[in-house]
Length: 405
Figure 1: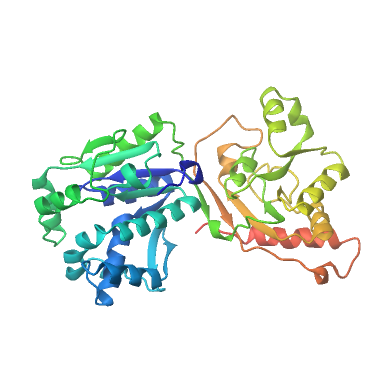
Figure 2 (figure 1 turned 30 degrees about the vertical axis):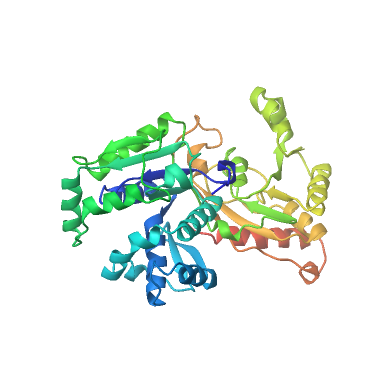
């Protein structure tokens, strides 16, 4: 639990006692923000189910440790939600079994179990923006996130909610167990915003959280990346994306865990703000008139040094949001380096900041990452004047095939 917040993407922590409404709120909030929804309680329940399947009780500490050390505990994304897999089995349908309900509180007290859950949530936060719900998310798991909320409701209301769900949790006993456990007890983080949900709908709670996030500076307008796991984070790689607006380089850079080099029109350096900002980034100035061989050579040098570069195969921004034909420049870079290419397609950036438009519009933006394309010497045959164009068009076809999911 010692990772720095700088290691993570944005995390919104939603804590609270049982039946406070945090699951419904966190799930809807994640949908609104375009973040991944993670339920820490589901991980505890999955681990509890696994131990019960092995015939191991929470009191058998050595047995618990041995079982967890030998188990493969991973996570995957399904419909925008993080799902836990144990030995490649998804136990989702068993998480509310009565025997799991009866044992999860005792299992979740164990330090070894809590350490595993925190690690899995940290792994998720290194890959995606998260809305995480639980009982110690803001106080222990992500103590440095500035986006902390604690939702609560009266015991009577929470008891009614549990009964409506067909469950019979003893709320008072569960509260005592959560708040009195020696490891990571349920507490309100000092900088958490508290919301009483007793007489509020999910919609009203979510709207209150969104308003608070806006005050704290979180960009709440939806931006998401689909298939981030396909990105190449080490060694030479060409990120090839369609070009819709000036937002594209900035947003493309969020898909990769390292700095990337990209071309920018040389005349942009003459504008007051960009002329100050771009030289501080990994920008290679390019002349748009004709072929700027010096810029292309700079891209090739960056790739041969093991860096990632961003290339727009179309060469310029679209006027109407539609894809443009590929230019041969990307093919030349591929032929000279044989660097793998990650095709990417951005949706919504044209509507957010259109070429020749009237300013920034806050609309959903999505980047879909395709499967990497690996080139070899055979791809360079037959050589000829159309080689570069042919390579560029192959990548452009892969970009065009990407769709919103």
